[in-house]
Length: 57
Image (cartoon, rainbow, N blue to C red; front, top):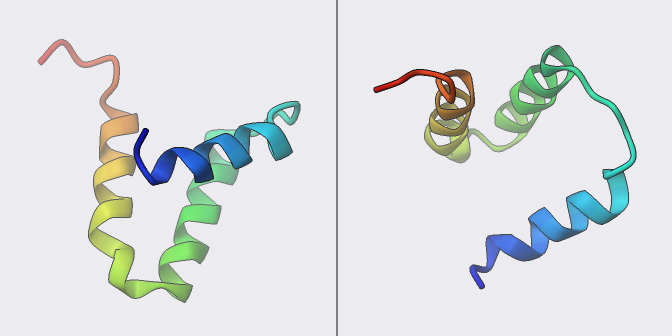
């Protein structure tokens, strides 16, 4: 188990029943980077990865 799994598990247990839009998620990611600019690159990589999930590359 990776260290990040704890945060992912907490997210699923605390908010797993909620419906969210990608617009809502994008806004939360922007807020997070505004508060934590040192995470800009990982957040950008995650957002790009999510955006391209259906690409066949």
